[in-house]
Image (tube, rainbow, N blue to C red; front, top):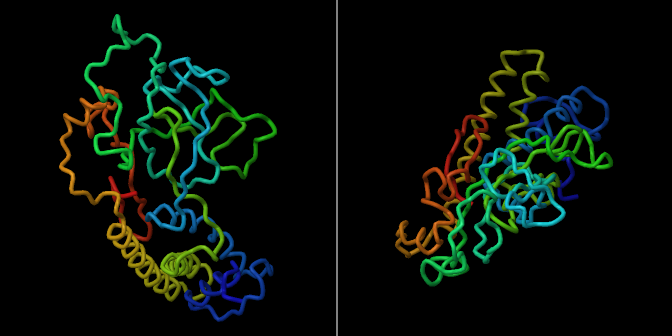
Amino acid sequence: MGGYLPTDVIQQCIDAAGVDYLLGDIEDGSRQSQVCLRAYQECIKQLLRAAPWDFARRQAPLTLLADGSGNTPNVGKVVYGNQFTYEYAWPIDAVKLRYIPRNYLPNPGATVQGNIVPPNNQAPIMTGLGQPPYGPKRIQPARFLITNDFNYPPPPDQISWETQGLSPQGRVVILTDVANATAVYTYLALYPSIWDSLFRAALVAYIASEVALPLHTDKALGRSIATDQREIAKAKIMQARAIAANESGMKNTSDIRVDWLDVRRDGGRWGWPGRDGGGGEFWGSYDDCCGAGVVAGAAF
């Protein structure tokens, strides 16, 4: 009832692919279901990475693995690459990291070992250091880097071939200079009941474009249907990106940004935005999907 089961979605994909087959169950063992099942979850993952779908947005604290300053007990002190202060575990339900919000809370003890420390490191350069330039409600992204670290393998009871970001050798990690970091990311939303109609329409067309060729004995017909369905999915993705840009209020502001003042009020902690050592150049993008193209520096 309501068409919110994966079987209903797969039946739509089979219909869109131009195949005359009535699916009894997603796991009925037929060739049609097997071909669609092989494409189903991977297409969901890729489509989720192609636009900032509202229903798939999640914000959650990150698990700290290492603190390069050595000031956090019971965690490692080696941060991969030594370019950032903190190393966090990749959220196991994340398919794409959107951004790491800056944390403006004071963190006086986090001085990286080996850095130059002034004689009186309690004396401020000016008043108001560490405060957000436009009030605490303004969210700004911080620099981060995603990589793989073998220094912190998961405990043996956590190792699973089906767990994202984990392997017996190591794990996917997030490096950043943000203490007590949270992440805003796209999570693996597998339940059709929470998808919006645009995502579902794009997914049906995307999967149909992937399965049309193997399901048709007439390969020329299969290729033609696949091309048509890919164009439909592309149009849906572009529409979703435009809607997200129009609806997002996070970039709309009447404030006039003065970058040197931002850095001054930050006490130099974040560097110059858009340059090496600055804030936010490693955040926000959409993956290409169905020819919709890669969009860099995208919205939240």
